[in-house]
Length: 180
Image 1 (cartoon, rainbow, N blue to C red):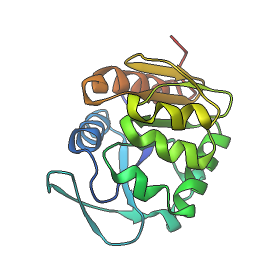
Image 2 (cartoon, rainbow, N blue to C red; image 1 turned 180 degrees about the vertical axis):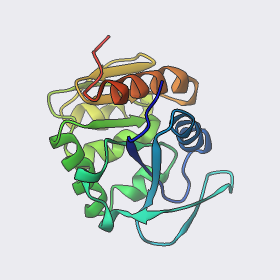
Image 3 (tube, one colour; image 1 turned 135 degrees about the vertical axis):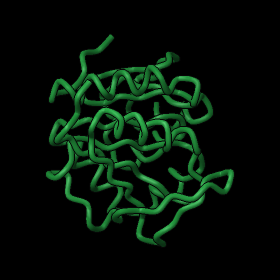
């Protein structure tokens, strides 16, 4: 699948889940997409739950939804930090408003709750934050990937292959993926 010309932001903060950042980054780069690693601006280098470092290309305050084709919010404990930054929530909300791909996996849905993009949607996430997602107005389902218009969600690292297939499909189509 050729994603040349597509640009996707991957949001990071300390304590991100290693696989949920790096697997999407490598899959997107492999397909020819430009990947923008975006942090909160609290620092330039962020450490995963296991100490693996990633350097941010930008921070949330400088992000422009008009300049990307989608955003991915990985899990770990990072989303609980990311959601505290209004610039992060505003960016995710604007990407969603523009009908572009908004994807989250595991605890990444915490950011979607704070960005108020789940209302009226069907989604999935790590089971421990199901109540947060439901209280944010989403119908929760327990499946490896859930596609609802431009929203793509998954539960855990084991779901990464299905998660990325849905994201790559949506980006290649230039429009939201078709729900399954």
